[in-house]
Picture 1 (cartoon, helix red, strand yellow):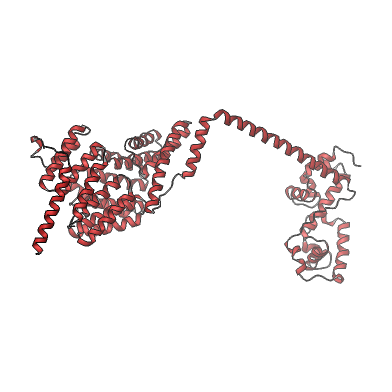
Picture 2 (cartoon, rainbow, N blue to C red):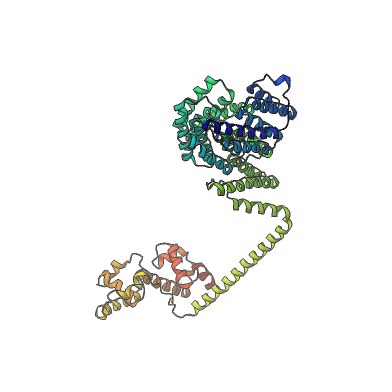
Length: 567
């Protein structure tokens, strides 16, 4: 009975697969290609690019050969190439979905998990990480059931790639290390390109974590494998990693040499995504070497790839930021605006992906600032004359405002001056109470019995103008008045409603005002000389105190006194 059920299931899968096959375009493999291997057909496909007609023939030959030999992965390769040359992703994705539906009916050790992983890689290469993650989640369901180390290692590797691309470096390293454990355990390093590049990707993660010793260690292990392979593509990858390590170490000449030597291998492999990173890195390297022309050259190469393939990679942002600044310095606002728009495209794309997969992207250029800058440039280009008129109006209003302020200030000064000279005996009505004064009510008040003798001696101190001595301080004055500093301070706080320093400054300023009003000779003194005469140690402290108690600058007061006869 069990055998009977298996036969029915196999027949069911056979008819389902036939329905997919019959839905494909009919194609007869040319005689010249019938004996070609999959590797040879693959080489012919890439060698004849961009000859679309020949590429279509080679991709279909690969597909139908795989169909005939019942090789599912090579069937996927053929469809992938056909979608690529026709620039129609749906050709590949529809075929993947059809195969998945067939395989889901009876999951095997490899399928449909392997097909989900192929779709995940496809979306990752398109920089649609949210869809790539969805495919990895689906693949994991079947991997957990069948426990296939090889397939699971690929899943871990792809998850590491996505984590790395969204800045989750330590999480990416964890996935790579778990992948490494399975690959090393099952000796899978040469099984496929993912595992061949694993050590290199671990090395790159260590460069992002600034652990350059570990990065160099894994890259050296990588070098041994690639030299044994004698594969120019992987050797180029190795040179690229060395370039990143040298770049991180600040060895920019060595970095530039490594990056440039890796270009050919990436071009031969048609690795546009990798070329984007290399060109951006070279551009940055030449910036550090202060070779702006070469930096411009390679950043423009990055831009050219973006225009042709719309690869929204974080490294592209670095090129666009350079080009924005470059053209701003050249006063080329049209070019500056062009690259601001391109940078915004990438930022908006990244934010969409961020919301879908809840990852945080690093912002070198804030989007609101970019939008504001774009708006500013557009308005400058479209309404330049109107903007100039607006500026003229603002400048005029500002000028009139300044004049008005100066007139009002001059009028206020004049009013204060006249009030001051009309006072027979100037006494400042602006006592300054410091913190100790404010808290005096909460302190123990000194008795009148103690205070009165001190106040009488203070009156004599004021009358004899001893405050003009710049050496007077609280301690020395207390000694002069036959009391202690504590009592004297409390008396001044309680009865003069002031701190000692403010009390002294007020006496000195009142004296200075009186002498300037009465003695024309004093008006001929410098501010510094007047300050010294009334007990201040420098002109600055005198001027500040004078303004505090009169709301006039001493220079203004003297100048106005010379204009009027007050004697």
